Image 1: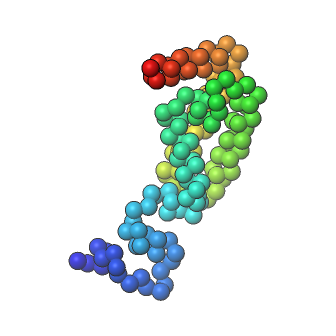
Image 2 (image 1 turned 60 degrees about the vertical axis):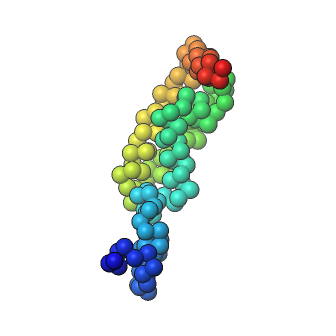
Image 3 (image 1 turned 90 degrees about the vertical axis):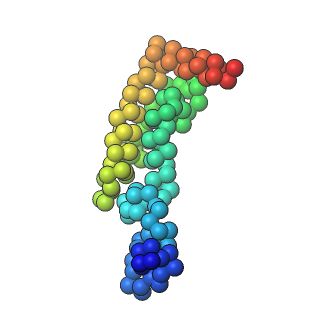
Length: 137
């Protein structure tokens, strides 16, 4: 067994904190958790938003309940956009982080448009709610 395969190898004193984490966990951290641009909690929050975008209705994606008012939708979108912009400006983002940001920034305006439209929003939410009720039966 070579040193790279030995989980009990002695870590040299000159190793960086990142190298220690990688060696201790045997490299099982997600690539985004290995950068200094986002901490693990921020990455989890961004990745959770990206996963909701891929699988949830717009209001759930934004962290809102069914029937939320257009002004609440706009407020939530503003908060999310401000957070995403603050992350986007950080140096050292890796490809996975940039892809998650791009996906979120592309889908959030569409969700806002649908949910704040006076006709489209209520119809969309009603159909989503009806679909959810059908699933639970």
